[in-house]
Amino acid sequence: MLKTFVYRSVFFVLGAAMFSAPLKAADGSPAAAQVDRGRQLFQKANNGVTCATCHSLENTGTAVGPDLKTLGSVIAPRGLSNTINMTVTCYVQEYTLANGTTFPGFEKSKAGGMIEIWDLSASPAQLRKLKESEVTIKPNSKWKHPAASVGFDDQEMADLVAYIKAMATGNAKEVKAEELH
Image: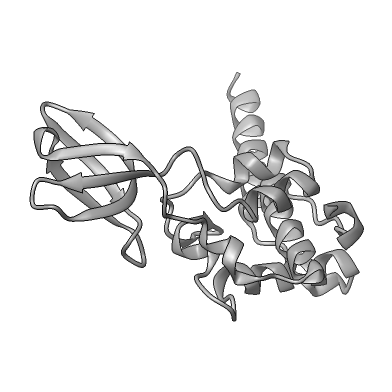
């Protein structure tokens, strides 16, 4: 009984370490190098707001937007690319406060007459705690997913998708630009 517990514990710890350790290009493979390039784009995009402003992978970034590990584990490269390039999302609404202030955001929680809303007009997004009675909600008509305006070229998009998929699955697999179209 104790022996089984010890084996299971060791197996669990080793398994957790394998899936939480970042992939590196130490092996020199094209896939691992691509994952490294994607990691750099995720953390430091040259042309606009980084993915890490609203998403978190490898304990980097702000976990405000949808969980990219979940998406990356179930969506093919083309679907991820299309999602990254979306201009509008169903999660984001337009919030107007009693004083007339309007901002794009999405609801985190609602309880006891209070509402928590991620304010996407701030960078990084900020969590606002407001009285529900002082907030009006309507469909988003202005906010656009920042990644859609960055203008990633095909190779950069393939690199970013490879990084997300590798973090989601623990497996670095090269993504070709042709797979995105």
